[in-house]
Image (tube, rainbow, N blue to C red; front, side, top):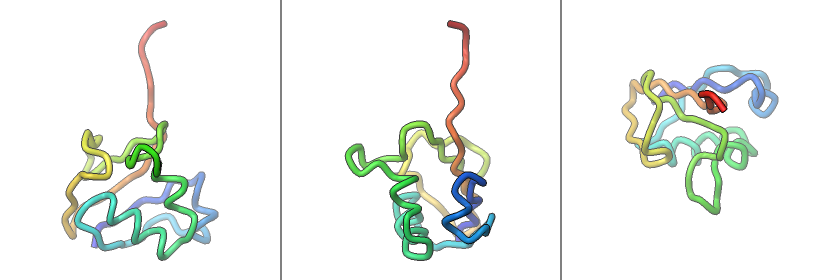
Length: 91
């Protein structure tokens, strides 16, 4: 099962749990399984209209920012982080 790090901002939905192990072969399946364990997580992580990660969030899989969003493939040893997306550059 993938190891999922829950951001501090939404740990209230997991009862303060920071790391959970969840099955899923894609990020989409992982989010659905997370929501079964901790109802309410999906509406924070998943944009139903766009069928992708919520704007302003990045999904990091095994240390790399995912370019595939919810389609990113996972393994049983994957480590997944949901982080606020960081913008940068000069204006």
